[in-house]
Length: 268
Image 1 (cartoon, rainbow, N blue to C red):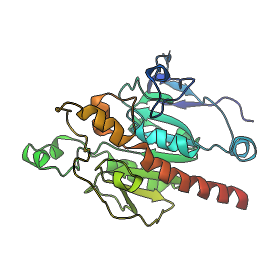
Image 2 (tube, rainbow, N blue to C red):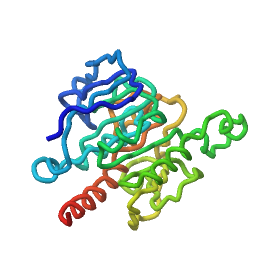
Image 3 (cartoon, rainbow, N blue to C red):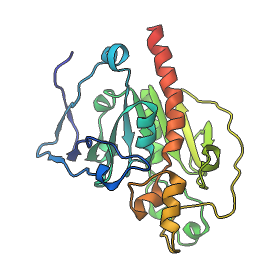
Image 4 (cartoon, rainbow, N blue to C red):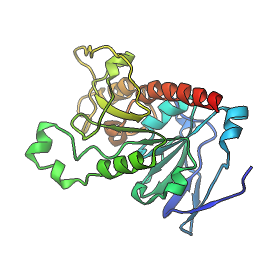
């Protein structure tokens, strides 16, 4: 096994994963992510050095890096699909349920990305959201396009990756998912571009009346609870839920990627 390696990443904070990961239906005692390791140097150790052969022969648990991870909706889905997940976000994420690195995603070097078997990216969608109020207030123009540069970077480096964003974003999406497909009481359409492409048939949306559509702030009695049920997330606060991706989406994608990785491993 290779020794400890170091990468030039301007990390603000490294947050170790809690001993027990939260999941829908678990109590608040499972949400303690208060253990932090402050880094006084821009050098980040390659924690958990595990070569691919070790995964294939012993753990069969590929590593996935979740960029722009937020509070961990996508990460939880990949975790349930069998991945060893690490999240990166420029903002503190005290409720993120796995190993977390606070850093600027755009400054992470390829040498660090290469340590992971799969890269997922959910760049901020505010540049591309098509809601009426966003256009009225000039909301799109006030937010930077981080999707285009991260997509170009992933395209150029290759490997296995997934990019998620809202309808209207400049993606060559080969998959659109909605909560109704997974039996969730939720209307939240999201586009996914994947490499390798995942072409799967999914049924059309079948939204019912009173379906949850989290955005902004919960204003009605019981609305926040309906958001948590609709998304299948119980560890986030209101602001985090408004931006979250249901874990069911990435669990669905993650299982397809896991099958692809196992097949590739057998062919080596």
